[in-house]
Length: 84
Image (cartoon, rainbow, N blue to C red; front, side, top):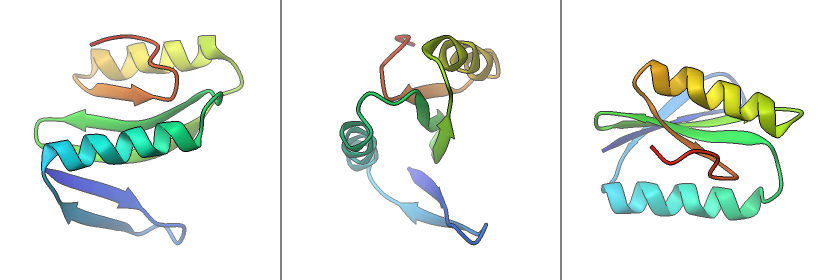
């Protein structure tokens, strides 16, 4: 699996890792951001993109999750809003 990680300078670094390792990374991020309304990763095929999409309310996160799912992505949010 390829995991794309955006850097603060706008560049994106790509890492190759096993799917289990990528999911463990997502879980670690999820635990570090407990209680926040945010999307932390998107996955499509064998590519995962780490994100830092923050929202004011859980409803806004839900709407964003639905939009990404419609586009064919698996969405990882802090609060596990929807199982896909």
